[in-house]
Image (tube, rainbow, N blue to C red; front, top):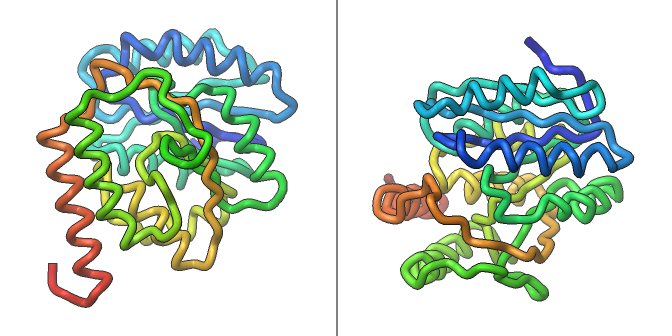
Length: 244
C-alpha cells in the first residue's frame, strides 16, 4: 500500500538488527517529534531471521500520527536493494536513509533539511570532509580498505570525499530519476547513485559528521568489501567503454 506523504521520510535498511533497532527507533522518533517537519520512518527488513520484523511491528503499533513507523519487506538481498525499494515507493517531499546503528547522529538531519529546503537535490554525510570527526574510529583494517575504496570511487564521483557514509537525503523527484537507472544492490550502491545524480547535472552537498564506528555491523570486510570493489571496477570499465 502507498504510504501517505510527509515532509521527510527516512528509510532504515535492516538485516538482523533486532537488537539495535529499539534504541534507534526510540531515539529517532523522539527527535523527530520535536522538529517542525512532518516525518515518517520506514524500516526495510532485508531478509532478516532474528525478529527484526517483530521489533518494528511493535514500534509501529505504538507510534502516533505525528511520526508513524512503517515496515517494508525486501526479499532481494543487499543494502542497495533495500534502500531503492523504500525510496521508490515513497511519496514524500524529501527522502533518504541512514543506518540502523545510528553511526551518524540523528541530529544531523537538521543540517540536511536546511540544505534541502534551500533547494539542494542531495545532501550526504561525510566522515572525511573538512570539519568531520571520528567519535569512535574504525579498526585499522577497515580504515585501510576504506581509503583504497575512496581512491577508486573518485574516478566515478567527482569532488566527493566520502561516498559510503550511511547518511544520505534527497529531493524525491531528483533522486527517483537516478534510482531507476541504478542496478547495484550491495554496498557499492551509494557510488552508483551519486554518479547518476552527478551525470544528471545535480549538485551533491557534503556535510561533515561526527561518526562512531559500531561493532557487530552486518558489513563483512571480506565478503562485502570484495563485492564492493568488484562492483566499482565494473562501473569504471563501463564508464570507459570496456566490457565488464
